[in-house]
Length: 198
Image 1 (cartoon, rainbow, N blue to C red):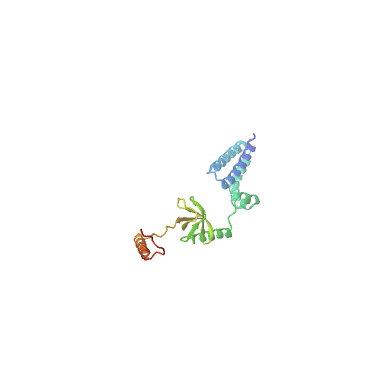
Image 2 (cartoon, one colour):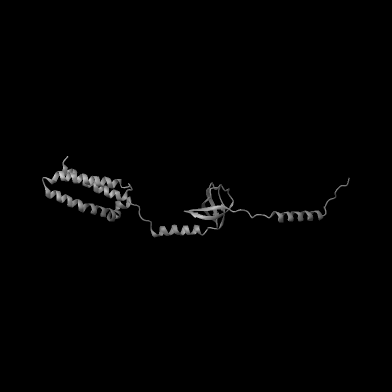
């Protein structure tokens, strides 16, 4: 193959790889391949023009020095605004989209501390009804039955984190006194039927 043609092709491939390195996450592998291709292009140009046409050799070197930063600038500033670039690169979310997400997050955070009722079995995720609104939720790693009162304790992403509301503890001494008093009242009451005597 002609060294001059090889020098030009290797330079074009190197420039394309530099553009790809900006948009494709490769951990620097594409950049190393691009530098290798540039080195090969310089070697081929030296073989083609150094001994026969020094003017072409220095023109090539000047072209490389100009083309590399120009290509990188094109990739960063101009390419994203082209029709093809817009298809390749994801657009930045608009302010309205970000605001909507922020408002939803703030609304979910306002539910912290409120009591809701599970609509489905939480295993550990499911749905909960809070303030007449159905929300995706998850428990703290435990299974919770449906129709159980839960408290919202945190928000993770778009999910509410809930815990079971414990029923009020009944004081056994007071309940024992109440049951004894009720037994006494029942003993005082007269029966409305006759008890047969033996």
